[in-house]
Image (cartoon, rainbow, N blue to C red; front, side):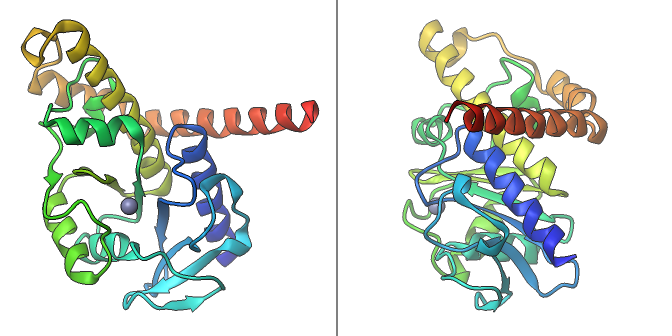
Length: 241
Ligand SMILES: [Zn+2]
């Protein structure tokens, strides 16, 4: 059971690494402990793509390590406080992907110029502006959770992203979509010369697409694809080395 939880966090972290979420050793993916003891998350000091099951430890609700080795990430409070506030959230991604962080700093809204942004409908993502510094204590974690509210993602201005979902595949898949949606929004606004010149889905269409494009079944297919591609890439690298 514990092995399965650790393996899931390793797999999700590798998918994040393959899809634009690596920032050296910073950023993390968490999974709620089914027994209610806290969160499973990687130890500090390693990148998403470097992990093995031994690098995933259990952090209790007080931010202290309960099981496993290594140092606890300073920003564990993002995960702990979001999950404490949201019983419906089982997995959280916090990372620093370039396009989403850039978008956060511009104030430009996330636009549904493709399907991707519809995962986060309705409306623009909430933006956390209290600090661009690390979310290093429970009080800041609670502020991030308050900014997130009932949504499934938020931008931390001058810092990164938070994606909070009902399952680890949905959280990782959402993080992958968010970075793509941010990149497309920036490109569209830049090419068109302003937000007002960009054609994008209405709120009603974005909501309809959220349910049609990103049902659990559809996300399951997308997740399976991301895992297959990861394994194919890993095998190719193994063959070529
Ligand atoms: Zn961070």
